[in-house]
Image 1 (cartoon, rainbow, N blue to C red):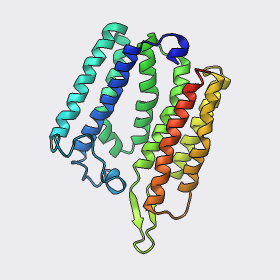
Image 2: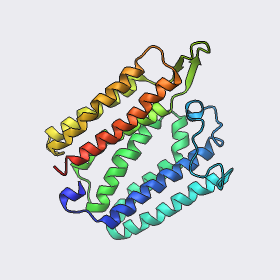
Image 3: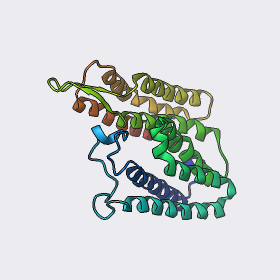
Image 4: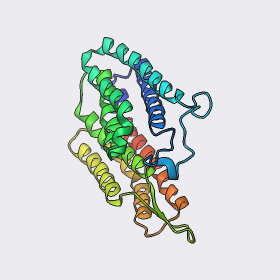
Length: 259
């Protein structure tokens, strides 16, 4: 989008990209710490993704050091934010403060059942509109239109990764998981509907419809979810496919600006 509009500043873009990565890393450290080092029974990854840990969480950053690591990441991001506020203006502070609040409050928000909404806002509208504001000094309709499908795809991945095992048949190995097939279906349908609507309304280039090529992968995810029985291994397959659908959909939408 920035390249197509001739506003790309690679130094600023790279710094923003780094800031997003650091924010994600900081949020992971805080999440890991606030769920009692990944042993809280409400922590949705405990069953399916028990081996997950942030970088060096079991070595250099063991114990309470994960808390300090998370706060340090947010401090670095605050410095990056100050740089952009000085350069762009105080309007950008709203995006920076919102991002910091989400990183700090993600764990309680998740435990309140607001994980998908929080992830959608953080990785969709907030991140993309914030970067666009830093580049152009304003919020544009095309950025909003592009951010909604991306945010929904990330929220689908987050929902699938947050499944808990509700019951398991020890003899057959089949499991019942706490996923909502309807929620995933609605988010998937809405994401592609917004993409099509954005093109029809002229907010997105017509070639952004290439993002629709990720529909077969998303369909595969839904077909598996609506299966009556599945093993944990079979369930992990649609989780991976949903990540591929997110990546493919986003890259293909971006390619629409270069064609």
